[in-house]
Length: 588
Image 1 (cartoon, rainbow, N blue to C red):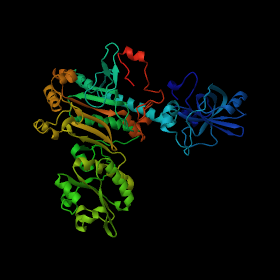
Image 2: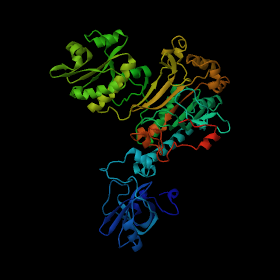
Image 3: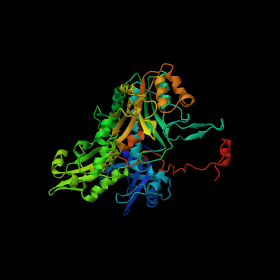
């Protein structure tokens, strides 16, 4: 125990005692985790942030008043105890303190507790309370050792990130929380201005423009543990407010960002006891979509998508022929040993492909009696040999444009890997995906692929105006075990090129000045080449702890309905408070 942990009410924290402390007198304070009565001897598990410690009470060493008090004590009551550290007669190897106990001389009840609405202690056989109930009583839920360990790890990861970035010359600079509404991206959370009626601030979706302006101001290297806000539909991996490690630097190329961030992730992974082999492999966006159907593939398994257009385009299948005639391709997955899956199990895999928009999958198996399945009608033994099918294999086929087959085969890949229980080829799979499309098309309109400030690939500048859909951007994502941990790019630093990109996006004239005038003014006064990345802190902790949801790695998260159940937010505001802000409630 360090002096910094000692207080006027304790000499040590519960989870720090070890055999070398036997014979010493100690004062501990914390919560009653559970109580046991063994025929006149009482045992309490005391819990504080450091862990659990057994306290023992008996007539030979505990005073009468304390022995009387322990008979009635309830769980989650706050107690203080003083006694001597002794070896436990029944060691518990599952506890760090499992070889010792404190034989209590005196006990003091600091604060009694009502019967808890949800149990902090439960046996492995007991079901966990519903998530809604846990979030409603978050103060009790946060007492669970596993959640406290997760939040402690989060603290150590944030501290390590700060130290790593500072050691490399990055300055942590805070950017505004009350800012200007953003014209692109997700919906803003708006904050009405009392002193400027009818006008609104927005909570930042990211510090993007501010960090670019900091580069134009000459700060060279910036980072921030930034709070960001987006009013969007929620999922298990989304929260309306989140934290990111925000990074920007001048006079760089993507290789500089890759090197810094690989070193950062190796450092963070080391804190969490995870391996990060350097350098991370790299794939272009087109390669990733071609081989895995996804821009965040999970490379712990080597299953790849294959292009079978040349082999199957001339088959008797009208579905396949029509797909190719309409400009599509025939692509699929070959699963060694996959023939063990039943028809019903394959239908479950197919359902995953349909869930992302595919009309369905064709499949065939190669068994002792030859080929079987819907695709067997038009696949001869010769064609099967050309496809590389061997006895015991399963083939899944999708046909159509890549925008349909890629997500379908990506979903089928994940589902069939799970159905077959395929062993991982590696435990940790890191990846950079690079050169994303600069634009996306939606109903004939160009939209930014990442955001409007991404530097076009130098090779695509000449074709930017007449063939913008094929233009690549110097954008990149970091992927870990199939999850995107961060996204970044080299930014446009030339004002005329930035205006050119705005025009392609249909933003021009007065609108440009109104929405982006402050950025363009910064670019026109000698902005350096610059770029950066934002890494999701919440998602990093989620992945490193193998948690099911971001709500398990945030102290006070929101539900999927964007509600804070513990404090009851959002809530109605009095009419007079709204009137002071110049806001009139909508008519019901």
